[in-house]
Amino acid sequence: MRYIPNSPEERQEMLRGLGLGSAEELFDSIPPDVVLKRALDTPAALSESELLERFEAMAAKNAAARRPNFLGAGAYTHYAPTIIDSLIQRSEFFTAYTPYQPEISQGTLQAIFEFQTLVCQMTGMDVANASMYDGSTAMAEAVLMAERVTRRQRVLVSPAVHPEYMRVSETYVAHAGIELGRLGFDEESGRTALDPAALDKTVAAVVVQSPNFFGCVEDVKSFADAVHAAGALLVVVVTEAASFGLLRSPGACGADIVVAEGQSFGVPVSFGGPYVGLFATREKYARQIPGRLAGIAYDKEGRRGFVLTLATREQHIRREKATSNICTNEGLIALAATIYMTTMGRRGLQEVAAQCAQKAAYARRQLAALEGFSLPYSAPVFNEFVVRAPSDAAGLLRKLATEHDVTGGLALSRYFPERPNDILVCVTETNKRADIDALVAGLRQT
Image (cartoon, rainbow, N blue to C red; front, side):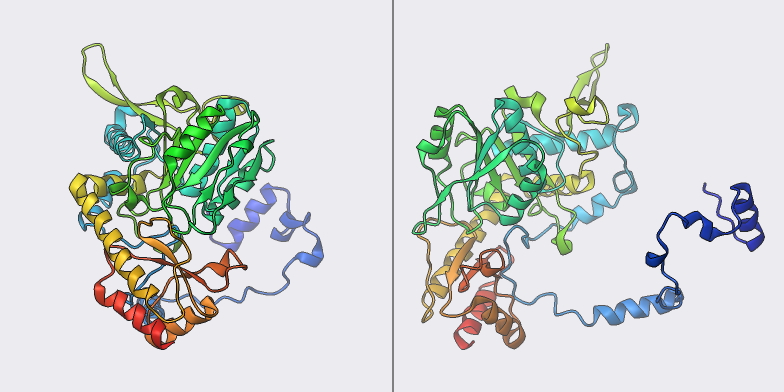
């Protein structure tokens, strides 16, 4: 336990032991012009009851939690069975730390192993790691892994990959000697355009998201054929994990690395996190996978146990030989996703995906019928799609929220200033028909 001196005499005694006359001398190295000369402007301490009253007053200012919401773009509102909270709050899971000692971490290691197994089944891949921070860092790690596998320094990324995922990758490779290039974009279909001539012998990988940031489902199989012919790897990014319940798996379409955001699997939006990244690949690339893998081992009596089988992180080996500098994994969130996938089962996941697609199709038809509104892209979608409004989208959405109490989607001008009238709309199984009708009616009147 840390010792904290409480009285002035104790503090002075500690300073004398350090050879100092005052606490200010501890900070002599700080330039005087940047040192705060006044007391901090913080409120007086509150009692517990007063603090609770303050929080309740602040909470009362929030908008109604059940207002119709059509935001997506990488963070999705899905139903989460109540069993998830009940289980992850058990102390043996809630307080568990990194399972360095397998003999006392069998429950945690088995949960991680089951998570990896389910991720492999979802993605159609051979091996999955024990989870990444989130989908964006998983994509960045996939770019680094592709360079290690191919020894090539160029990676071509679809312009329909989530812009924030792209920014994270740019940060990761800024000093790694990897060049990030851009593929083309078909403005009619809303899909990525791949020119085979761009796939020369310097390209390590092609990164494509499906469904992409604009909601359009990409033709992953055709990408795989062209990319493999050039000796490169295909990285498939999935931000809406619920799509695994309906669309053909990336592995079945020829992907070499699949990364995804698992937030849709029972993890609340939570103002941006924590989330859980999924990372899966082919067995032949297992030793290049970042993070860690949990596996099964047997003792001399044939008894099964769970262990960390691969953990080529900088904590364990020389930094220059490590596959990743990720120092932990989103264990508790991975457990929540595991409970969600197990509880819902194959049929439940398929039902969720089917409802998302059906409700999105209804919303798409209704919005397209509004005067002045149109659907700019022809490619098939899952549960997100772009609607082109007759005027400034950001202004429309603000009026929709204030006058009709509906969160209508994301104005794409946030990421693409050249698209001032475009709205990205997301519909999940939690949106009732009345919610969709309220969105349409609100836009009609705005």
